[in-house]
Image 1 (cartoon, rainbow, N blue to C red):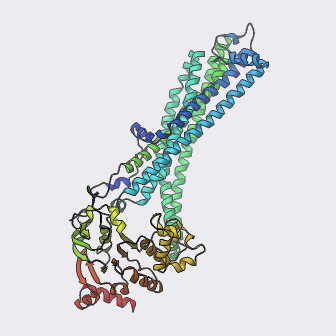
Image 2 (image 1 turned 45 degrees about the vertical axis):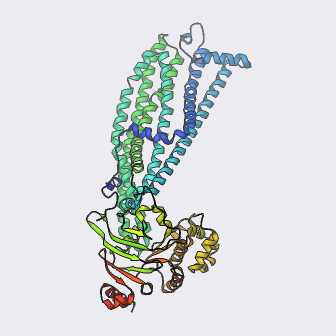
Image 3 (image 1 turned 135 degrees about the vertical axis):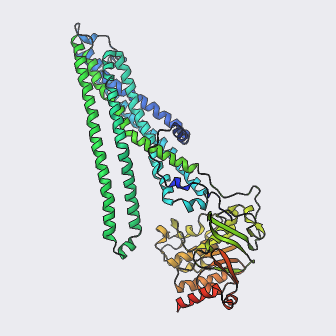
Length: 625
C-alpha cells in the first residue's frame, strides 16, 4: 500500500502549547537575523538611548552640584567647595555665562533646559527608531513564514488545525514585538543606571555601597513576583484563548444556535469561562498590587539611607549637600531597571515560547516529491488518464484506495460515483498531485505524473469544487486570480460560456463589483457559475467537477448543464456527481465502493447489470419521486 510522505511525523507538536520556555540565546540570535537589514536604524537607536541617558543624568547634576553647591551654598566656609565631580557642568555653565553675558544662574537654568530637551528628544527618537527596525524585521519574518506555509503540501493541512497555524503567523509574531521592544525598554533603563552608578561611586563610594546592599532585596522580590505571576499569566492566556474560541464558535454558528434555542446554554458556558478569566485577572491584580508597593518601599528605604548616612556626612563636612540631593535624585534610576525587569520578565519568556513556535514552523520541512529530471507534459495534450493498480492511504493501516485500475480515453466524459467515503475525491486529489503516489500508478498521455512537477500537472488540470472559495476582490479578480495570462476578455468570454455573464452584468459594477467575505453577496448558484468561469478562463486540458452541481437549484443546474455540454466537448472530463442528469450523459461510469472499483460501464449497461450502480440509481429515483 502506498503511504503518503510525512505520515510518520509528529504533527501533535502543533497542538501543544509551548510555555515556560527558558531564555534561549540561540533562538534570540536566530531572530536577530531578520533585523540585520535594519541594523543601521537599530545602531542609531542605541546611539540615541546613550545620548538620552547621558542627558537624563546630567540634568540633576546641574541642579545639585552647579546651582546648589556652586551658587546657592557657595562661600569660604561652605561645604560646596568639597571636591566632588560635576561632569564638567560647572565649566560649561561658566563658558555659557561668559559667552552670552547671561547671569550664571540663568545660564545654569538654560543648560538644565537643554539637557531635559535632549533627554526627551533622543528618548523619543530611540523609541521611534527601535520600533521601526523591529516592525520592519517582523514584517519580513511574517512574510517568510507565510511563504513557507504556502509551500507545505496538503498532507500538512490534513493533520494540523488551520487556527493553530494562524496563531503562529499573527499572535506569536506580535509577541516577538513585545520581546524585542522589551529589550529596548531594558536598555533604556540600564544605561542611565550605569551612568548614575559611575557618578555616585566617584562622589561617595561608601554611601553608594550602602545603597547597593538594598539591590539583592529588590532582585529577590522581583524573582518572587516573576514566579508567582508566571503561572497566573499563563492561565490568563489560556482562558482568553478559550473565550475567543467559544466566541468564534458561537458567532459563526449563530443560525444553528438560534434555530435550536441554544442561547441560554451557550450564554452559561461563555459566562463560566468569562468568570474563570475574571478570577485569574484578579489574582494578577493582587500580585501586581503587592509588588508595586514593595518596590516603592525599597525606594523610600534607600532615600532614608541617603538622608541618615548622607546627612551625617554633610554635617561633618565630608560631602556637599548638593551631592546628597544628587544621590536622592539618582535613587529611582537605581531601582527602575529592576522594576522594569520584573515587568518584562514574563513578556520575555512568553516571547521565547512564541519564538520557538515560529521557528518550529519554519523548520518543518515537508514537501511533495519533486522529480530530479522533470518531464514536460505534451503541448498538444490529448487528455488520456490512466490509473494503474493505484493504492493509497492517509494513515497507515487505513486504506482509502485499493488496486484501482482504469483508463480515461482522450475527450471522454466519465462519471465517478459511489457511497460517501468510497474514495472519489481522493482519486482526483491524487490526479492533481496534492499527494505522492508510487511511480507508474497515475499517468497522463503516458507520462508518469511523478516525473512531472506538481505545478505543471495542476496547470493542465482544471477543478471545480463543491465548496467554492471566494477571495477578497472583484468578480474579475476571482475569475483571473492574478494570472497574467487571463485577460479581462478571457474572463468575460469564460463567464459567457458558463452563462454567468447575465447575472454579473446585473450587478452594480459588473465585473468590477467587489465581493464581501466568502462571496455572501452572491447566491450559491451564482458562486458555482463563477467557479466554472474561473476554471474555464485558463482553458484546462482535463476538467474535473467534484460535486459541482450538488447544491444548486434545478433552474441553475439546467443553465450549468447547458454550459457543460459545450465545455466538455472534445475535452477529457471527470465528473463526481449525484445528479441523475449529469450521470446519464457520461460516456462511462466508474463505480467505487470501499476504495475499490466495483463496476465500469455506461448507464444502460450498469442498469442492465443490476449491481451496485443499479441500487444507487434506484435509491436516487425514489428520493426524487
